[in-house]
Amino acid sequence: MGKPTHLIEYEGMLLGRYAHLSARGEQRAGGLERSAYILLSRIRMQGPMSLGQLSEAFGLDVSTLHRQTAAMRREGLAERIADPDGGMARKFRITAEGARRLDRQRAEIVAGIDQVVEDWTAEEVAAFAAFLKRFNAGIERRGGRPWPRPSDGPSEGG
Image 1 (cartoon, rainbow, N blue to C red):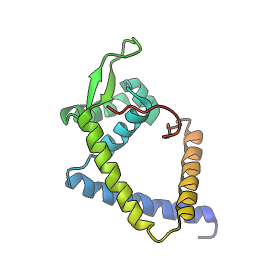
Image 2 (image 1 turned 135 degrees about the horizontal axis):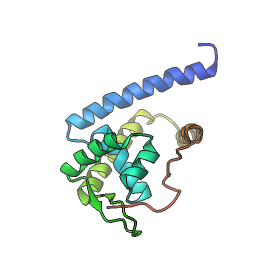
Image 3 (image 1 turned 180 degrees about the horizontal axis):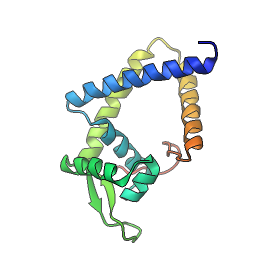
Image 4 (image 1 turned 120 degrees about the vertical axis):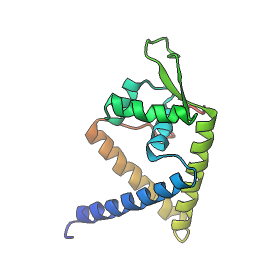
């Protein structure tokens, strides 16, 4: 592992593995499926979105998103509404139940991260968060699919 980017790749692989294992545990414990967690997070940050907008944002085909949104609707996590801006396409909005479960799962994840970094200084945690945000923003720039951040604008609470 000569170059630092090799170490980033390796540590990123491990982080993905740990996140996957954690998500499997959350799902067994009544948490959200990974796709629902990510979709609901995006809808909350951006507001109601159509299948086309979700497809563009995620880089996924509409049929995949149709299956995922149908599952969320069956669980009462999201609902279809008329476009608030008067457009033709119906949009998906997070429900109160979806917001409640998203908040609960996010709090559990944050609590787990708090335990992992409990022996870090506040400055180290802030620096890691800033570097991670910068790294993700670089990926988003490269892929042409920027994601809204909590400080980027209004959120949709449900």
